[in-house]
Length: 276
Image (cartoon, rainbow, N blue to C red; front, side, top):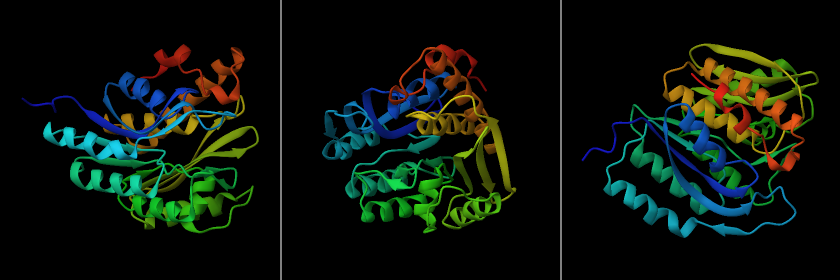
């Protein structure tokens, strides 16, 4: 029996029951773009860590036996998408996953979830950040925000980088191994910018007009759409544009419905606008 007749992405991330982020956005958005999303949880939370309190279950001890069952099925993946990882152990598990399941036809997308606004997340130690830096070497595509790009390159964070400084940062990130990099959500007042670099095409800036504040989960929405679009054959630049345009629609919908920022983006109202 062949389980590999449909395009598939393995999505390795946490699952939050409330607050749209991580696997709760990857599953519907990747599916909407015609790709089967196969979730591998790293943790299960009642609501994400941006809320004042939450219930958290570390999935580390379950990941290897979970993966072993996929090996028995002889699954192959067109894409592997990694997000939030909760420990050094999980980073090593994900590296082993990539080494086993990725071949020359698999695109590996690492969203190096480590921090924002100049600060690392509370769960990320210095050693974990070093581990993510090593994981990036296995990626074809990475989607850091500015803070994460600084951590990966060792460049001190500041609130405002020039365009040339960000282009140089994308080049340094590609030197670590990936073929394609996008530094996401750079705040330019009335615009949000995404800094794209491809080894065979050089740097460029993709801009969208800001219509609302950024929200929890937008990075997960962005990475999920880029992964699915690229697996479906769109160019990297077009995949990034699709993601940025859809997030703009989500932010507009969320503002109209007065959704709290912590609750994430209201993608359900506009999901029919998401297509290849």
